[in-house]
Amino acid sequence: MKKIGVALAMSLSMILPSLADTYPSRPISWIVPFAAGGITDLTARKITEALNEKLGQSVIVENKPGAGGLVGTKEASLAPADGYTLVYASSGPLGITPALNPSKVPYDPLEAFDYVAGIAAASQIVVASTNMPFNTIEELVAYAKENPGKINFGSPGNGTAQHLAGELLQKAAGIEMTHVPYKAGTTQMVDLASGVIDVSFEYASIVAPYVEEGKMKVIGTTGTERSPRFPDAKTVVEAGYPDAVNIGWGLFGVPAGTPDEVKQKLAAALAEVWEDERVIKMYEANAQTFMKDVTPENGKDFVAKEIEKFRSLGVTVQ
Image: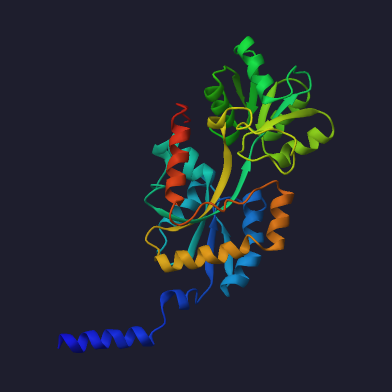
């Protein structure tokens, strides 16, 4: 009887196609936990143009905004682990908030999701008022050491990636600056342009118009690679402060327990997407970089390291 069962199983395995061969057999939902029209949403929609072609099925972006990305991310964590629900796993709800205010997070970033691939990364551009006597990160650090606490830096609010970029540089360089949180990034840019604040850490698309008009100057970037928008600006790594690296990131996530063959098929399709000319042009326009080194095998390690990096700053946010 046992031999018959084994023979039957072998026969079925030869007849039935593997999950990787049949997936996907219906449309896929991609939850983006932010409102339509923002950079995350636009990035996802451009990627789906190519991803639909690679998978042979429709990938439908579903915007689920709320609570800084927590609402949509939680919804994705509760979805079946069958490969038909994806999530745009962003650094805010999966890195920063779990580190600074874990009691607010209704899921475990390392247990609720598997991470298939990196999507995009964007470093903060370090900009300064034209009134400031420094023009590089090294000169900023030297000035800050001579004038502890006298440099102030603005951000769109406590616990934002821009705020933490300033905290990371202070810790890495052993300097003291004064943080000035704003309720909106546009307000802090206006104040920096008029000399009310001295320094800011912001994304390239936001600072570019002010820099082009000569209202502020670029003195560096928080990435490991130079910004394609400001290629002359040194990175914090080049300036000698690798522990000050900070990027806003997005990963391609699925509910934990999604079959390995499904994750591998998604990863293979995305590897082709990153070579698509439409996607390449979008990344260049937005000063984003690909995160090709994030894989199904190391995705959780990446998230764990980011959480620990932010936690080590000792910053708390209510």
